[in-house]
Length: 614
Picture 1: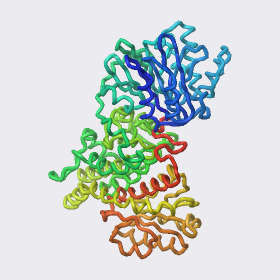
Picture 2: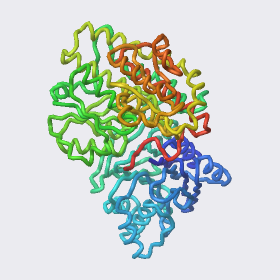
Picture 3: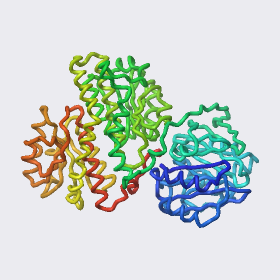
Picture 4: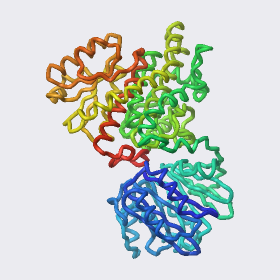
């Protein structure tokens, strides 16, 4: 979690840092702070709450400095308050530091520093690191750059840090391990960010630090990157392909609603250049070199967390049904602590919107240690998962700012559908006529998502019935069971309501005991297939107990109208495409319910966008 910004150049640092923190606030919003250094003078300002609170405080002061760092926090060590907010400063006032991650051996280090006379002010592991660097620097009479290297050799855990020395306003030092960090390279100026969003307004040229690397960036425009063991690194400069306009809400009241409505375009972008109706084929250049190895593998293992895990579950149904390849889907947070059998014949696919999810990265590295081929399915170009894996697929969904993920899910499922079709084609698992039919139907999906979004006013009218409910159920079968899980997750995340997703057949194995008068039950009903009848039976089971049935079904489905209390109409599509279509009204239901309750939709309590700590 947490967002880091840093600036060194010829412009005033404070406005650039504040703008960057606003862009990174989706990463954490418990507290915020900044520090600027000018001619050996240090100003540190911190506030509990949102970046707006910090900006108001900064605007009351005349901060003329061209070097600074800032931070927006999602609390791990220490409650959210001004003392625990970053930047943290060493006891001697020399080292100023912002940090994303967790120092796992901070208690041991803190005890040693206390014995050396250090007095701590906060409850954070970050203050421990600031003092450790200060002590190492003073004892060995080192430059900041070298002191950071030496100190980090003593540290266990995850970190992305930006560090200043109050006695040197010409240098900014950064380092990374298991937490993201990007440095924008301008004309004698450098902009540091936890991701590219604070950088793109200033430069499109960036370098990505890898794990166990430390960088020194100097006022004269020079820089140096080394490993913790002092091996010199020659970092590659990447060009950002990111439109600054995509980072604005435009005319939408919330980023989440904007991103829900961006899904047709995002799905088209995921398909673009990959689905060819003229050639009746799917091409995935990102995995082309390893495709035969994938097809020969005894199984495909998907690792992911949260919404990405739900997308992986949909992918399991699609790949097994269309291509006939066995698929396991594992929660990355559990996978890394299990004795999961892997060898060099296995293929592991990591799914993550940000490409920085800590548990997913750890699972990926475990798979690599066991010799498995590792693939990535991510949205953010140049992210750690993208750089760690041998091959993969980008979703091209564009920036997703709202903490609750929407277009990431539907584009991940779209990409998994492309993989399923490609594998089916290569393995000859489906007749060519059936493949061609699926390609054509698939190409229509963005238009059908646009049509689905027209149900928004109907969903909005439903929201008053959902508030103040003890529990809300979401039911689906087959590839729409994960959609039920995702619908429940969205309702929990932003509406703060107790919501449960189930495979519909499991209701009578216990959960049906919670159905009472007017209990809302969302049910995804396919327009055809053998499971349709079973779902209609599930609906009648709910109705028999006076539950309130909300059906996601075709507007032309007369049979569903006989039983449901409320219908959220969607276009009629083939069952394999229903997960994407059915997800849209569930996203809108969570959104309008949260708005009606007055919740902060884009920044829900206790959550942050990218989970970069364990």
